[in-house]
Length: 301
Ligand SMILES: C[C@](O)(C(=O)O)[C@H](CC(=O)O)C(=O)O
Ligand SMILES: [Mg+2]
Image 1 (tube, rainbow, N blue to C red):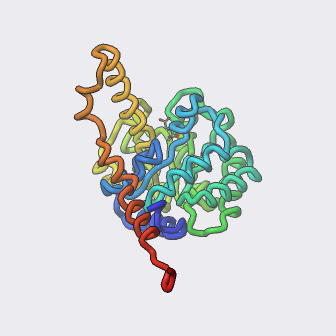
Image 2: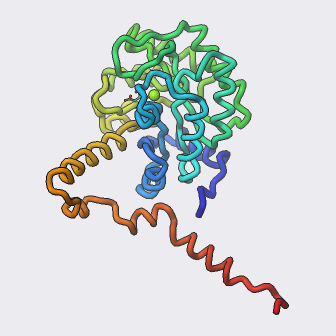
Image 3: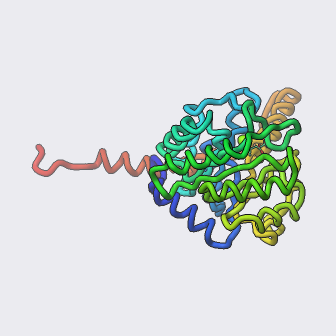
């Protein structure tokens, strides 16, 4: 009731154990806090918190316009609703080294289990679009080194994302991944890999866990979990998928409402009130309330 019973430190520990387990860690994007308990109940290993979704929900393009305060708030809202580890998208870290340090501490305080910082220049853009630019090696390495130095809980997972594949190619991505690992990154997020072979090349280049981004309508085909396991990927995210699924359904049902004047036909496709209350742990609040009001003060008249 009220929130997760696991502390941020426990979830970070679980995240690290999952990454070291040799089992693919599957993190669907919790596009809204309410989706986080569902992801947990269905047996996934963690929940991803997407910058693209956050921006979209604020009516903004995903070009680094969201603020650290907004992102931390979102991280807190989602992390409190699940016992699972959460990985949050910290974009470029909201500035250079000093800002990155503050970003890490704010997100740490928000209770996330890990975060990723990317090497794009600002204004950043979705990693699967063309025309991206990346910062030089020194700046990229400084961002990660600053993040690692600023972390107070050594359990917090600091992941380095590199967008260089789309700019300079695979060999540059492997080199940069190595440099980011040497700077202290706990894991590598190679963005916009074109094939399974490319994931395998990054896997061979570094010793730390690697992430696969299975975003739809992007540069990577949607490989199955088994295909990703087979090339040694440790963690997969489906960052924007739940938003796309929900918005697709919403549009279809709104059209039906406009045409027919009722949503009666859509009810069987809706999440029921009972299911919603299950996810909110409604019954536990009732039980808690009863205990409070049934309490008797010994010796009271
Ligand atoms: C993973 C990502 O950074 C996100 O914000 O969710 C995006 C996803 C997307 O826009 O499809 C990305 O840059 O890949
Ligand atoms: Mg993003």
